[in-house]
Length: 226
Image (tube, rainbow, N blue to C red):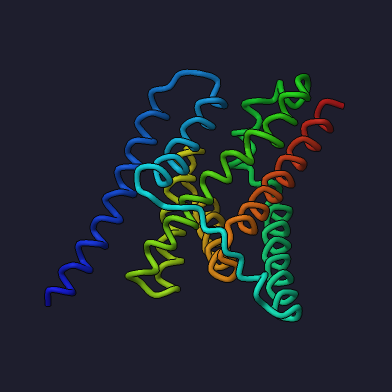
C-alpha cells in the first residue's frame, strides 16, 4: 500500500513539473513582443534543456544502444528509422506541404525572397538548437521519467500527447491533420529513442523533415514569384 502511494506521488510529481514548464513557456511566449525568432530559441533552451538539466537534474544520456548491437541488428534499426523518415516525407508531399503550416512560413515570406542569409541561419543554426533542446526534454528527460512508472507503449503515448500540446502552442494551430501528424511523429520519435537510447537519431529525423517542408515551401514561393 505504501509503495503504491509513493508510486502515485512520483507520477503526480512528473506531471506537475510538465504542467509548470508548459504554463511558464506559454506565459512567456504570449507576452514577448518581438519578431518571434530569438525569443523562441531562448525559451526552448531555457525550458527544454536548461531547466531539466540544471534544475531537475536530468543528465544527457550518452549511451548509444546501436554501438553494442551486431551489424545486422544495427542495420535493421537504421533501416527502420529511414523507413519512418520516408513515411513522413511522403505524408508531407501528399498533404502539399501542410497548408496549415505554410501560413506560419508565409508570415516570414520576406526572408524567402530577400534575406537568404537569415533563412540559412535559421534552418542551419537556430532550428537545430530548438530541436535539440526539445528532444532533450521530450525524449531524454520525459521518457526516462515515465518509463519508471508506465509501460513502454503507455510512455510513448503520453510523451506524444505532450509533444502535440507543445506543437499546438508553437504554431497556434488545432486541426485534426496537424494533431494526428504530430502525435504519430512523436510516437515514432519516442520509439527511435527507446531503440537507440540516443536523442541524436530523433533529432536528425525531425530536422530533416523540417528542411524538406521548408524546401517545399520555398520552391512554391519561388514559383509564385516567377
